[in-house]
Image 1 (tube, rainbow, N blue to C red):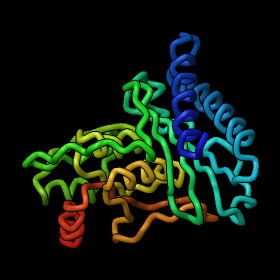
Image 2: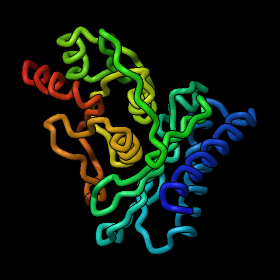
Image 3: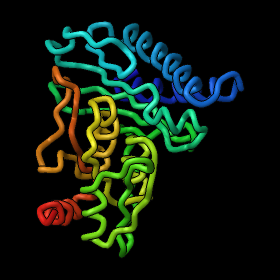
Image 4: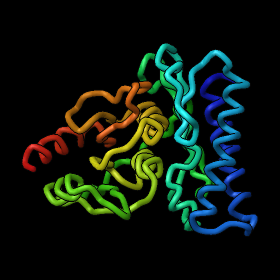
Length: 242
């Protein structure tokens, strides 16, 4: 398989495993989230180490190693993006598998098992046109003040949603138009969504317009913006007003 095919395949299989764990009826709540994280992480980590022996690896659920910092190709995965939503048996959670090369999110796949979908950087689809009134997707539990301020400035409809991957893919699928986050994330939260969004022709950046850079020693990423290219100037202008 190509790298892109591998990413999509692993994300899809991990999603099926997670549905099996959830459907077993053995776990609930936080225990379900923990079990799902463990199962999906072990599968993804072992599969990538087997299939791409020479590449680096960064996973939310795996102990980090400084060895990846000297490697050009690094796989960045989030076994369950939106563990709370997964544990609550919602659909707005995702599986992220991405490859960063020299810090750039070159390819990735985001599985949305609850929607039986896998969005891939190597198979972009047409992003539907935006409606007259823009829609902004925000965290359903802790919406960022900046996002709410921009939504007010643009008179955008607010759509609460769970995981970062689900929110970014909502823009890809035409279910939303802007995803602005300032509450802090980590590389695994955005690498695969960024790769998929970029492949679909969307604007992806930090909220100051600078690019997202991956495989850093400090994996914390303070903010990001995913939107249609024509809406990015509107968002930046609204942010200035805040």
